[in-house]
Each structure stands twice: as structure tokens, then as C-alpha cells.
Length: 210
Image (tube, rainbow, N blue to C red; front, top):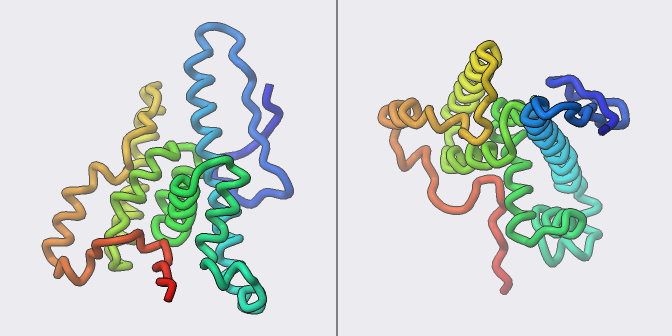
């Protein structure tokens, strides 16, 4: 048994995150247990994002530390934290940088969709797809509209499935069904002014070594 307790939506914790999940007592409980485990993984991922997000912005704001840091002369804060996470999580460079990309997007770009992750209503994989699908939207108002609408529709879908006793499909991106919605909005805007092509907007541009 995993000894824990956590209420969905309760983001202010004292000093520990605990999730109680009794192991299945009967064969009929196995699938339900797997679903609860998926929700727990989403919740713990959200909390990992929260801590990395706080560390990233604390380091960016601490100019005295940056000026005195030997590491900052070699690489920026994003690269520093991604490298540190790669070591403690035992993952490669690409995986750690992608995780930090998702971290920043969760709170700085699509926070409403990010709360779905924190409430265990979508998988980390699905959240990553949402990050990719919204990565090139650079107009703040359009991004906020897509974020809010996608999250609201996803929550509504989850409630309907819960009432029907169905298991939610956790691998469906919450903005996948909003492509037509986004296309209509973009038709009324100058595409080149609002849609950027290239690297993730969350990742700082790398400085060239001279």
C-alpha cells in the first residue's frame, strides 16, 4: 500500500505530497487501480513541474547569484537546470530539456491545461502534445483563449465520462479537437504576426560562442 493523501485541485501543501492507493484486492479491481496510478503519475509530474518552475524563476531573478556563478558564464539558467535534472532523473539531455520546456509551459503559457495535469485528468504524454500544439502561438490573447477553452472542454468531457462510468481516454490531447477553433481565429488575424516558426518560445535562445 502507498501511504498518502491528496485532494485534486489542492495545490497548497504543508511539507509533503502523499497519495493513498490500496493495491487491488480482487481481479475486478486491477483496471481501476491502473487508472488511479495514471492519475497519481500525472499529479506527481505536476508537482515536479511546480518545483522546477519555481527554481527556474528564482535563479533568473537572483542577479547576484548569476553574476557570481561560474556556470552562468558557460550556460544559461535553462541549460543549468536541465543538466541538473538530467542527473537526478537519470535521463538524457533531450529528455531533460523537453521536461523543462513542459515545466515552463505548464505555468507560463497554458496554466489552465496544466491544472488538468495537476488534477490527474490528463497524462504527462497528453500534456506534452498540448505543449507542442500550442508552441507556435505567440499572441497572448489567442493563447489564453485556446488554453481556457481547451481546458474547459476537457473537464466537461471528463465529467460526462465519469457519469457514464467510462474510463477517460488520457492520451487524447485536450486541444486536438480545437484545431478548427484555432483555424477560425487565425483566419481573422495576420498569421505571420501571431504565429512564430522555430524553437520553443519557452526556451531561451542559445548564445553563440565567439
